[in-house]
Length: 144
Image 1: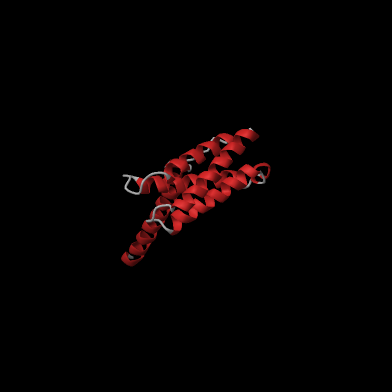
Image 2 (image 1 turned 90 degrees about the vertical axis):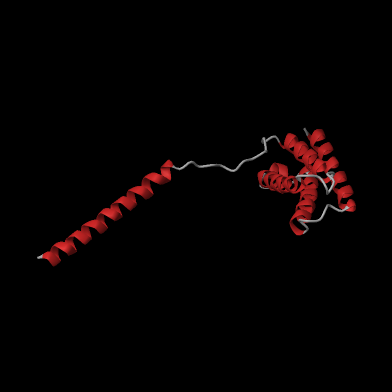
């Protein structure tokens, strides 16, 4: 009799724990806050192109001794990813000369930051990026 009572009490405790766990899984997922990814893009292609271009031109001109340079570079990589992911799949934009020029510059800069994270941007790459980013700005203004 005691053995049967002990067996029954163990089964009841397990069932109660399973029910409590189920309620916790159901209700706590709705109680948690969902944070969407932070984006700097406005949705206006011309404005976004100009702002991304100016931020990146400013970032590549910072001297290597600049305090907070690595944070600026991380922000630049995030901004590049944000821009490309926002406009890459839009057929009316991704075939434009503005976007392809920007994409070329962004790929070069992102590739440098990801491959040579501890090295400054070489002068020849800076010159090329400044030309491409300026051209993309001009094209964005003209197309707008």
